[in-house]
Length: 344
Ligand code: FPP
Ligand code: MG
Image 1 (cartoon, protein in one colour):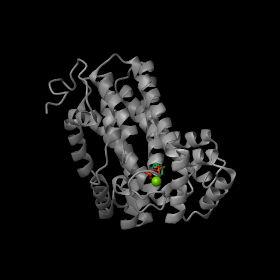
Image 2: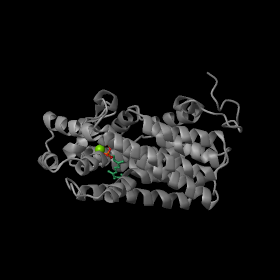
Image 3: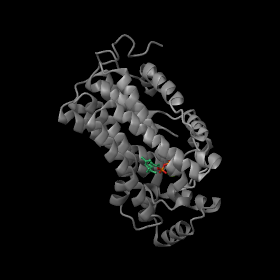
Image 4: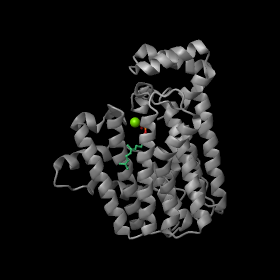
């Protein structure tokens, strides 16, 4: 198949039109392959465990959504953007994301990610946290090398925000009275902030006009919220095999996400008492999870969450109107649609 971006400096300047996400991946293959080589080989620490864990993590089939968003956003602002700068920044974003997941799996006691044992199961919680710290510091090195203070400030602020999201989430653990507003605030901080900044970096690289910078930041923010909403829906609905993570992990962890918030508000008083007891117990054996899944099916809580996710995607796509039609804009729309249509 001829990639839609084939004969461009990067992408064709007319509206290429993509049928699906595979064509977008294909069009960015060269950049993404270069990224893959970079992140798989770059970590060369004096502490072998860091190299082993990094190699394990970077060869575990991550979708590289953030690098893809960065590449497309940057080229939307400047088609001629240099590949070396894109690689440096997109690898930094991937290191930050991976560091966050290492820490997150410790916080969540998670045993499976991307269909494989989590690093904490293989090397222990302490090593997982330290490898996360190392990757985070490595990301900072990369960003400093770029010498762009606006980008440094944006990423520093983002990391702070991610930690705040996790701490807020911790403070609302098993809180069945958490408001929908507080829930959105948590997912905005913990997930959407990095995706928003990733998209905005494309504009910062090019010192693009403030309106374009703001539009990409908002595009990423809505997309990030939609991404986490889908993630939270999949936690109650996916096939575990496809998801590559344990189902019902949020229930077990006492994370009150949107499907649960919807259920709590839609069910009867008696059912609510049962649900609250299950959340309170925090053990989530199979029959408790089945009870919750049955109720969610009855009240369509997962469907409601996915509708909300699609609503945020529509808001995200709306933001791109600031940019004239282009293959990069089309590609960003396809990535946005993919985020809500994925089943893992
Ligand atoms: C996944 O949420 C977690 C995140 C998106 C963010 C985690 C952030 C931290 C632990 C703060 C540390 C930050 C840095 C920069 C080192 P989830 O548990 O709902 O998703 P999951 O199902 O994929 O685990
Ligand atoms: Mg988690």
